[in-house]
Image (tube, rainbow, N blue to C red; front, side):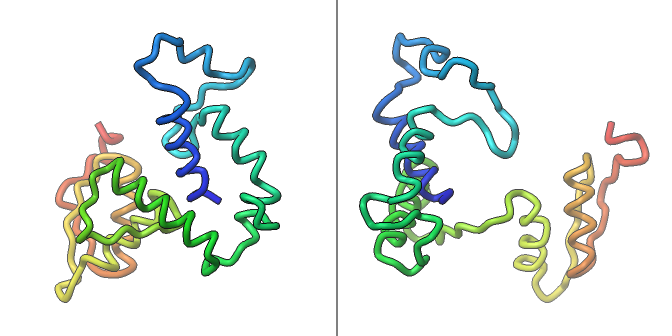
Length: 158
């Protein structure tokens, strides 16, 4: 589902609304919508949401929702391929790099990084300058030795 949203959002932004156009951004918003610029979920163009709404129950006539189809199906593989291509294009990811689509958001990285990067020494230094750094350091300790090279928590991260 989120891969589809990524594809639709990128398509809507590139085809329907140019940020360089003379149309004010407010005109592109449906009346009564809230502007959400959070670190996690954020505002999406109404056109993207309308596309998703139209295709939610029957994606491109395949008889089911994207949320119901197998991750091995031809339709889903096409969605995943398009999402990866768009991601590579937007961020300039070279072909010799792997793209991993994983659920979990930022906090997933707190375990993914030490699990994949501690190596044989099992140690990592952390600069703990805020709540997120502290959480990452605590998670690292589950998999190896997380060493606090700097910790500003005693001064309330200031």
